Length: 506
Image (tube, rainbow, N blue to C red; front, side, top):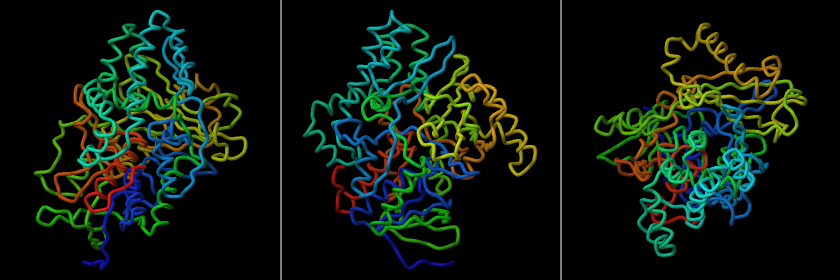
């Protein structure tokens, strides 16, 4: 077995956004870090790839946290982090978070302008005007609290003490609001079934759960912040975010090692002391951070059956079937928005494949496609069980992917007439692709809370193994780029305090 003589303060397993954020903030603070990444690129599901002259977002493309005005936007974590690192990430403001296309001709863009968005709902549901205002005001009140509280670990007693002392009433109010769900709050003010379905979809669009299952606190971030900090798209695509974090880590002396897969965490006497790589080498550290899912951490990385997370503890988030297209640009009309959601049947919106997510990043950043072309991205929820009968290396698998992609194109045709005939490049990926490339159980995007579970039951940064920590979508506050960024800030804050040199608040 090959041994590595070097050791560091902190090892991070996986170059997802949560892990990279943790490493960047710790490295800037003076701790030595190494990030090990299986792939040759950073970012995980928030990355980009090139094909045929196009740049495609591998997954995420709706980004909060890039407002230059610190008085707007929930903490503006991306802006604050890159400011601290001295790294610039240029972005393009998006006037609409999502343009919804729903049954019975119901269309509504979620405008940056809050009044414009609410008025469009009021015009569709004039009898619910008061209820609409009151419900979205509830989300606004959550946003107001969160926007005034500094980011930090909920497991850090000193952090909680500082926040409680400086903002006692807001901290108490936030604690109370963690007991409520988005859906039950909506139903206090609204009774129209179609409007309640829309509110469920507002939740499903980012949480992949209906509003009843979604904590009010999470909704206050995603559905109120869009009207303050707004949605901003990084120039060059989503890969610009992890690339900038890597640059920040390296700027302060840390390293990100690609094509370096971690086989397992080395645990001695119940304490994580390092990692073992696939080439047999070992690296020691004072702390180890896993950016893997909670299931992969305690089945692959830590092989201790006593620590396996019970399958029924959480709901497993679904995976995705994804379709990337290079198309003739003439089919995309002027004024077309970047992000769209298509629901053809309310009874199927939360079933596998029932909701189509659609993005056209080249309407904001034309450099992502050759002249006269557009890059498009379509995806729907899916599970590995739907594709397990195929050998992913075989022709049958390839044909099945293409056939399913054609059905998606047909369903999206009403949004962009002529779409099916305009396709010049098509790339597909199944949940099996997510499982292989992202090292995720069943290609899942982490655990979801069950209806009625308090948001504080979400796993935090500490784990049952001493000196082994976690970041990413398996930890509080959950799924989404800004959420995993928060988890990275929280994780770095806790580790820095434990190692004797706490982070300054962003």
